[in-house]
Length: 437
Ligand code: 4AZ
Image (cartoon, rainbow, N blue to C red; front, side, top):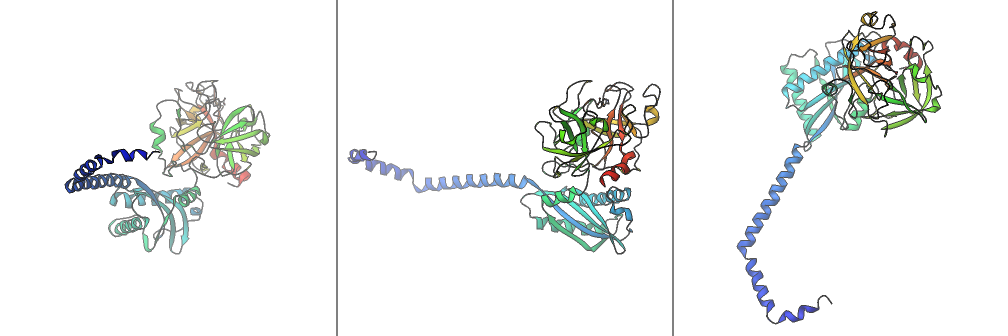
């Protein structure tokens, strides 16, 4: 039926139509249109290429080399030792010097993974991160990196003597890089596996608590009592162990009644686990708040990711001078006796010496050797109810250490009544004896 009407037009129209069409598609027009279309395609391709080229991608490499002007020390085998940290920072600074100055601003950062004994020196295993246009190939970038490094060995006065023949560079994918970094504690990453600089936390603080970004405090956990919701904070120190305050378990010590969540919101959580075990310090005293520390073991381990990560435990010898910047995080109330917050918050506070904190006008001798005061003498910024058990952390070259556990205080943010924390360094051996960490 639809083709039927063709018959009626056969009288004179077809001829005219045909002629018009022929005029329309004359060779000059055809050529002009072709040129225009080609030009449009060309410009479009150009724009797309431009954006693809501009779109930088992360490239990761595992470098291994021997340094000949230092001797291996036993403590290099222990990542949290002062010797390992100092040597690692020196190597990382040197990498920064090699690649930042000579480079094109493509170097992001490096992380020492291992220091191993090597005949007449130390073998270093280090992850290097770069950002290059996504159109670049890993092999080409590898050549560039090697060129920059070899050039530096010739021209720069470096504190460590790198043995050139021992240098190897292997391109690794983000998963492998993550696994390597996960062998270290206290590292924060964004969802694109880029390192999260410490400054991101400080810059947004004005006064009081600010909400946290995803991945900013990946060791923060929420301890919840089934049916009663959030009770306390806690810090992840391995893929199964949490460190928290003993007083969090005053109401209930039965692990089967608790759940643990990770992530920047309580609902929805990023990850959730049941508890398998609770260990409360044998000498915890509720009247004095002495030894306010407890361990909680997850029923099943967690996978480390950008949102779930363990924090480092400080060496028992580490001492923070007064007025050191530290961060406290939690889902606790923002006003005295207020409700639990669904979004994780953070605050920058400063350490206060025990001598000052024990003054008659402050806590009048209530601060023992297992406690640490942090906050401000004029109040205003503090942890509060519901933050208990949560972390007080210290940033040392982008590696975060758990220095305190939110424990007690007279009300919240009052002048001369700073927050009191469990001094984690004091319990380093206790933690090791219970967990092996
Ligand atoms: C509490 O009740 C609490 N300002 C926690 C921390 C502080 C005070 C009270 C510190 O859990």
